[in-house]
Image (cartoon, rainbow over all chains, first blue to last red; front, side, top):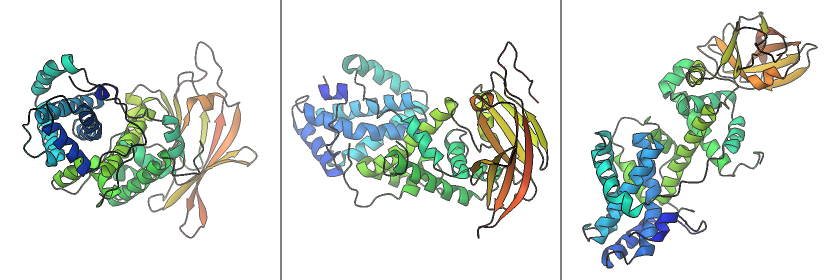
Length: 204
Length: 200
């Protein structure tokens, strides 16, 4: 059974996320411990790496639910392999997780054969669900978008909502693709600061 | 969770290009290897993903308006939003209203010589010339028109009135010139079994 911390996703918000060397240290501890006895380390490793696998899944699968499944499957596989002592270099756990993610995405894109198999094998036993991230604050994003120029806002919304690439946006707005990319970089950096509260002028 | 500092962070621009598949052709493995081992850069990518998801949600919830382009309007219509459109050339008059189900009321304002204009601002004026609103740096569509989308709720709340819209080309040095003026003759929305006017 996996540790209860995985069931809740309850991270202490002020604790720093483990750095790469800490993640490696967690992997070494799990690999060296009797199977299932390093519950706290497994929970910390899961919480550190699952969001990155989810992002990788979002990037390549473009589907939140499938990305959630991927994160769960990759981390379950990783923990099982660590427990079984099948990962030769726990120090390179991040690379192992990336490699596993790649392989699983390929499999998913080929028809989800492996996904069904893993779900059947693990889900009834572990029923592990990583808690989703902070809910999106749409009101705040709306306020942050309002602070962009109309043109920059159009570039952002055309990118993410209309799903147009830089060349298509450039053609529509009579700009160069390079100009669109620069505007997009600046606008997203500004939105990130605004969403993180670093932009004090944004109304609360 | 507060990520540890990264010794060699991936530039934010590169993260954006990676996320949007807009990177110069090449193997993304180096970025992906780094992201799996680096909490700070992963947090940067997560922020980009979160903004993208939130923008999508705003669109799906029908909360986008203002200077929208054809691709955005097309997407909104594909998702079932009702859009009432009015088109006018510079100097034109628009007889407009909003129907009960209109989600957006869109003005498509054509003007000459917009292709080389660096910045276009839009002014809303009351019938007596009072400035109601100035919108800065609108996107110019196809080098020939500006599209302005107002929420249907807002338009339905207006009384019958006349207004004007002006498009100004703003020079980098700060000078301005009028590139288009449009007169709006708005008829108030009257709720009832049928909307007060059909689409134009």
